[in-house]
Image (cartoon, rainbow, N blue to C red; front, side):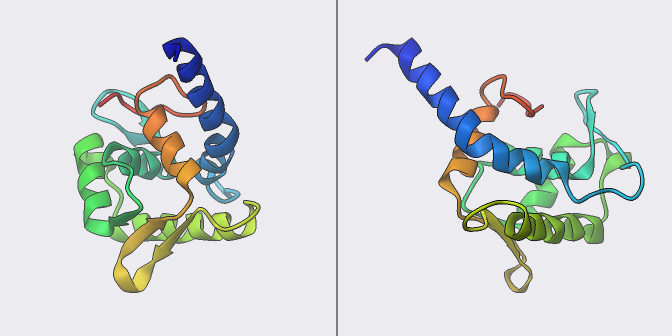
Amino acid sequence: MDGKFLENSLADIAKSKGFPKYNKLKAGPDARKKRQLRSFKDGTSQDKYSAILTAIASIGPKPRTSYDEIRSALQNLLTSSSMPAKHEITAALVNMTKIARDKIEGEPPLEWVASENSLVITDPFLLFYMKWATHHDAPGSQLPLN
């Protein structure tokens, strides 16, 4: 099989199936005020929704990720002064769950399970997009290369 054809096919799948969901989650809820940007150790900055998705992608992404894994990944990516507090992280995950249920067609692609303190990503296209985006110049992502 032609490698370039395969690469283009995978890019098309990632962009058409995973990106729209990722983009809605990354945008977060409608903001009443300007979002605080978080500074990354590489000199870039993003809001907490983008930072959390970047952190999740950097450790897999996996179908199930614990709060501690997400926090640790954020600590590895963000400067210490930009690290969100626990309630900010969990509030963002709750908001992403609401967006997944209310603004994305079909089954919600992810859910924050507070009783288990973990994020469950059920959508294989979202997982694929997040993984693919860490290794490619993906639209809407600023994910660092592994």
